[in-house]
Length: 71
Image 1 (tube, rainbow, N blue to C red):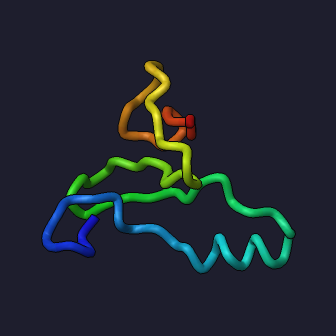
Image 2 (image 1 turned 135 degrees about the horizontal axis):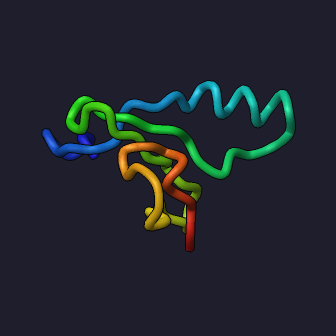
């Protein structure tokens, strides 16, 4: 991500909403929806460790629904 320099990453996400949902609904998020200025129009999940976002091979690779968290 960009924390080490000017790298391209899916760095546009809302961790506060995930924390609020966790507190209010007592459910930890499996992933966070993320976008990026570096990849306009593309979205992927940021998955809870140790899982990683994986494209399922079907659907539009720019849409978050085409991904799942696998580990």
